[in-house]
Amino acid sequence: MVTYNLIGAGLIVIGAGIGLGQIGGKAMEGIARQPEAYGKIQTAMIIIAALLEGLAFGALFLGK
Amino acid sequence: MIFLTMKVAKQTFKFFVLISMLFASTFAMADTPINKDGDDGGQVDTKKEVEDYILHHIQDSHDFSLFSYTSDAGERKHFGFPLPVIVWSSNGLVSFMSSEFHHNDDGSVIVEKNGVKLVKSHSKILELDAGASAVSYDAEHHATNAHRVWDFSITKSVFGVLVIGLLMLFWFSGLARQYKKKQIPTGFGRVLEPLVLYVRDEIARPNIGEKHYRRFTGYLLTVFFFIWILNLLGLTPFGFNVTGQLAVTACLAIFTLVIYTVSGNKDYWMHILWMPGVPYLIRPVLAIIELAGALVIKPFSLLVRLFANISAGHIVVMSLIAIMFTLKESLGVVGATGLSLVLSFFITLIEVLVAFLQAYIFTMLSALFIGMAVAEHEHH
Image (tube, rainbow over all chains, first blue to last red; front, side):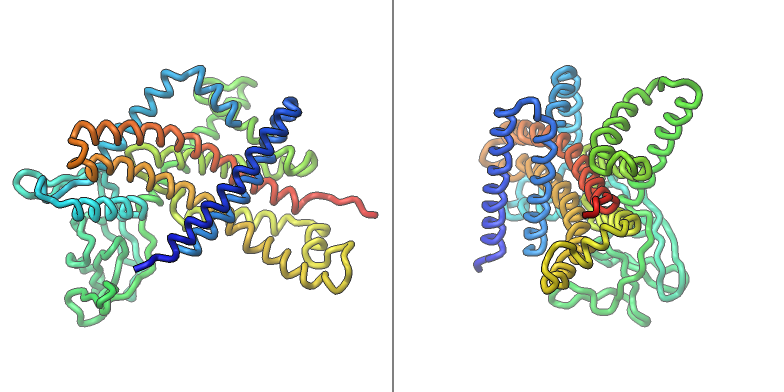
């Protein structure tokens, strides 16, 4: 028996991973360029990461 | 914030490691799955048993049990205490202690109260239909001659919520009293004060705005400490999984929804229902999308994020503890236990961070949504 929802879960995780990598990487670049904006960049990063995470978890939850 | 947590962790690193080690090891002891068949239990049985055990831990339960084992005489012993069962059956309100089910969960122990027969099956209380004397199941293991009742029991999660509610009432009213006497808090208040200030100055004030933040700081503080303390409680050997229950997170998300919907000003509703600055033909389409976003998607993402993060964390910790049993044959008792202890120790450390982060994110997004609803726009 092939369980397609597991393949779907894998795809979701790949997508979320790419997204989180982008967010984290760009935030790092931003902090390296302007270390004094550390706090602001981190807050924005966490909010965007949380929104993305919500989306990914929502998809995983609905596909369960 | 991660930076701050790391700084604190570095300063008190030894203490932190010690506490976490204690957590991890006691968690392992408290939630040890028992292989009933002893050594002759095959690989498949152990796997199934571990799966059942993890699922059982994730669910809410009607009694508070710390651990259980089978004694040499073959008797099943439970350590813990029963909690009251309160249900609204076809014959009115019925209440009794959950010990009357004798830890039975397959529906074979029948409790008769007020003329109704109640059984517990898969952690749910069912009422037997009139004339039925034993519960029977169909092929999909759904009960055929029993139906669900309204369950208002003080379950393990409700118990956790009550305990933390009282604890918070005690701590924070104490803190408030100390401020009335003199300006500096003493004792445990000194731990709480910087956290309260952090939520007010870093979460509420920048996201809601200088003018309105005072009104909502109370709610944000409550929600922050409630989620954080319950997340941390989930990492103790008591095995609470309160913030990993959909009902609890849904309730918190509905609070936030009601608050930002009720306190939304004219501009907020204007931007949802009749977005200024876009062509008239697009406005109704945008209104549908915005309305769905404000009333469904925002609270849904809040509730699912918290639920999924905490549940996933619990499942990972439990699975790593279960390595002790699943890899016993291939690695030996010492090897499997060592591997499991090391892995679950580090995951527990990460979970301590996640516990804070999820409370922070829930509070942060609540503040952001409230801030959007009360923001005043300049009219052009």
